[in-house]
Image (cartoon, rainbow, N blue to C red; front, side, top):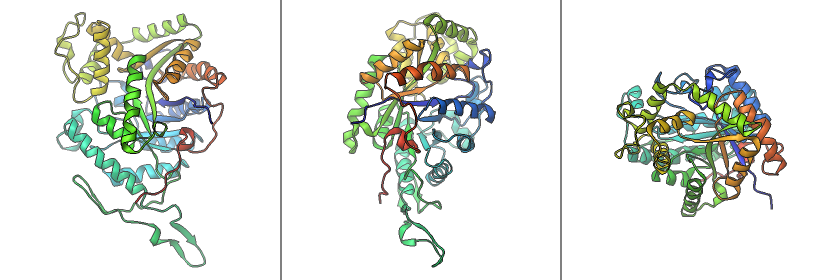
Length: 433
């Protein structure tokens, strides 16, 4: 039996996951410079990562994280990145609320062909309500967004299955290029979408591109349990992560799936040094760059209300609740803040550090020990690594932590397959009709 190993994804924000990471000496300062993004891709492949994952948003806010506002469109960027990488998976976000199933299915099938089987779609419902104004419509509420998403994801997967693997014959002697008996219309007529199909692109190298999701609410968890191959979770401590992991895995049998069919990757921002002291000095330097204006703006965005009206050195307001937008982030942060009696200033420092994700600071051995503990004790199948800045903050993890995990037999020494499904240990699906 093959030994279970850690999976590693890279959450790529060109200026780093720390809100002020771009200010660190020597850090990249753009998410629009393809040469910098290509260098990040090379580091990720040197570290034998499973995939690069690019989140997205569909609005601009100059007060928010710089990589949220000034960025390349994900599919365009990853198509370019596929040319300068050979092995690593390429995951991009596309909205089920502000997209359509046919275009989405076609785009990710195209990326899968271009990359020779490395494409992944992060299916999101889009949280922030201001997005609607960019599309000339009202932003649906949380429940409605997930109702639409259920149908959307199902249609996309069915469109990917409209072609048999051997539908393209290209027989020069007979002149038959496509066997019409092996290309099938979809004729979907649902509540939200009517899609005839088929796609105008043959079945992709992976059969179906990998589906990623990050829903933390109950509807999001059920959607992920039914449709996702990889789930990104938002956690702050081991006990919470362990409970969330067990709860999610327990949902899978309801949808005819087993625990190994879905890879759970908690997000973590590792700040790595050769010693614990060196790592904490790096974090201290990063935190010294935090602008209270930017941090409060991000906190207001996460909770869906103006946080500047509160006393930052006072207790967490009793009436503060998770917003409809960033429900998972807000819930996790609030729970931690109340559990540890934080002030609002503590909370916005936490938000600035990694936008509500887990921050792991220490020597390479400390970081490796912690990741191993989570992996071996039912809290994770791997981790979505969110470097505080590039390239140095990512180099630290790849050059110092990854070798320790490899020496312990917890992480691959080299790629053993060519597709993202190979990296994740997932079988290539047969068409379902």
